[in-house]
Image (tube, rainbow, N blue to C red; front, top):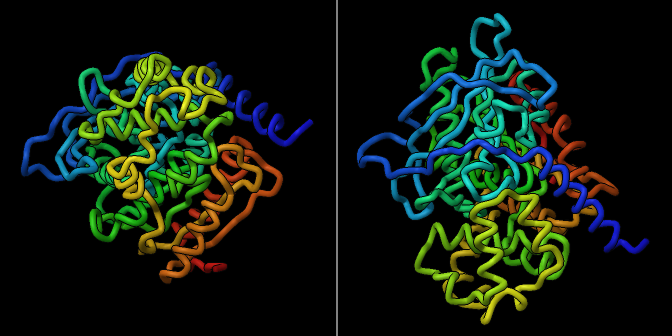
Length: 388
């Protein structure tokens, strides 16, 4: 069996798993927030339910929330999400993890808050591990823009701000027992790794009020142009077009439509209405040339926006646990290694962890408990070492 086929089998299995667990409940799109309101303020909240999977109960209290945040261009917006608190009788201050999920799809029905009540959110079991440790968890749905809503997928600044504001919202939500002094951890993998990395870099400038103790981030698409080149014509090719749709939604002046051929228009419509499994399976092994009349990725305006998503421009102000599967079929290992070098070179405290002989999904599953163990050390007040 060739390495390419092995990688493809892993990725197809992951996509089929996601398809089986895709969320099916509708959700309202984001709307503009009135000027002058604070990012992180609650717009609405209602009791909800959280199931890690369809067969496992949970003792967590859950709220579906809408809260104020900021778009990539600095405009106020409203984002949806979920706040989870273990109903364990614990008194006193508990840690809060603001958790950034990996790719689920661009349509509102794919959002984590849509799948939590029925146990069909793909990362529900991983999130439950944090709840079992006694931690509260805030999960953003990321920014949904337009009507109907489409996620501004892979737009790093918008994602990072939504992650930080989800933590603020959780602290301001009555009945959680959380407050502005609650110790906060940031966590995410894959798209969530990008979002968590951006939240870590933005923290000191955007949300210094949050008591961030550390960030655990893995499988990070830190350089979208390099990630696109790696996936072009391979199993993760559909993610390139999804990122194109996300950026076109965030920055309409990019005008993705003028670059698409008939096949490209078909896949874009799929991306806007379906979830990640359908999107990635349909477009697997396609090349950019197959879906466009002209490649937008070589255009100056597109390159400028995609380069603006690059992580590593400055070090996070809190310690980071950065992990990467060595055989990742979606995120090239050198991209993660470069992020390590850049954060270390800028004086960051970075603990780097390789996951040998693992692909993308295996890295998420194996890496999550290790990342939570590292966060637990930070919540316990133990100093973080780096291995730069």
